[in-house]
Image (cartoon, rainbow, N blue to C red; front, side, top):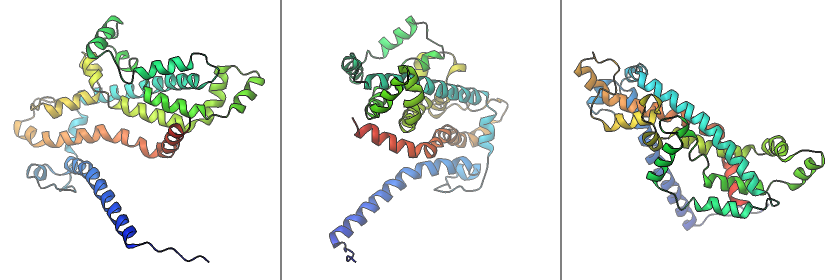
Length: 296
């Protein structure tokens, strides 16, 4: 039996400092979330008296109830879900098809197109040019203006290209011998054995589409087509309470009591759905990101 190696005092001190710093970073990251959550659930009196420090003081769901009665909230939420689902599916399909094509050694334009895409990571036409292009294409104030432009993230595509380069060539050759064409090889063999990178791509795009804000302000004039993030930004930056209440008959005292708490509740409503995706995709996310970044 080998004797267990003992740590030196320097190693103990290093480990202690390391864990303390990690714990501090964790608390600093977690505290704002807990605080917002507690403020949204605390009683109105506790919120106005600034009694909430960490955990909820009292309990009230009136802020959530009032928000869910607001048609603007429900419309914005439905728009966000649509943009996230449709945009993620479209971007994922385009990215995976492009990444697989650019990973093939027998594709003669592989190097040229890869460099072409890389240029867009460092240079772009700017906001004015993009706006004029959207108007010329007839996409202004349409839902397609959120889904179609910027369908591919070059960074995400590079990760996918690196992953597909490590795909066993023997499987592809065997499929070709069996009479499979390239599209069938991609759909029946490559995708079925690439769940990790698919999870990475889907998660990256889902988070990006869920947080869509600037493009929605720039390209969508109709408020009925705007996502919840635009409404959230207006609520947080606007001193008027009219955006928060669908019923204008509520008295000013009740509005002033609820408005601050409703802002915190709206933040939670916006954050929670996308946060729930991470636990289910964590295993594939770590595996796919590591494979995509280390293999080439």
